[in-house]
Image 1 (tube, rainbow, N blue to C red):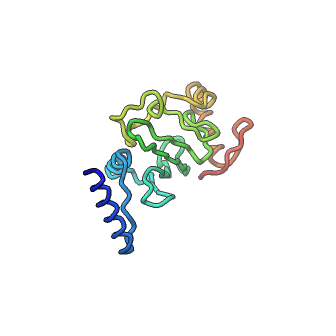
Image 2: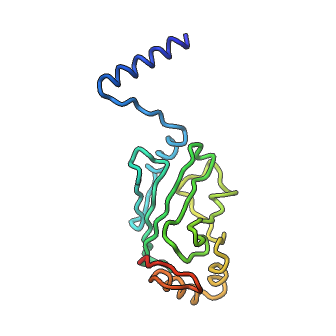
Image 3: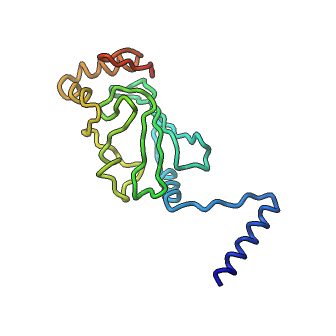
Length: 173
């Protein structure tokens, strides 16, 4: 009986190929869940989602953020998301492609949010808000905690294209 189903599937595939159709790719459970999550996204006007590999590759996308308030007002920041096929059982990998002076982002673009590591749960989704008290850039976090005015000055200098300490930040405004 199983062989019969396989033969029928193969015949259907050959018939579709003969008609010029490409066989439909089955979506994984992770792709189906991500499709649902993306369709439910209610992004503010300061965020734009794009799919650099085309809309057929939902598992890899980018989000451009242009904050309209706060320390990062006027900046443009690009984040890449790589979603594993076993999503939501494993968290997406997030990388900041814009060099930024931020407590939760190191100079290589690694994003440190506890929900992307040990606190990730399958009930979370790509809409879940991060915990901002989880520093990766300890120097920036300490300055933010101890001297918010200096932190703001450092952010402005970095975004304008300048040095903070001995680190150069390309302009992102």
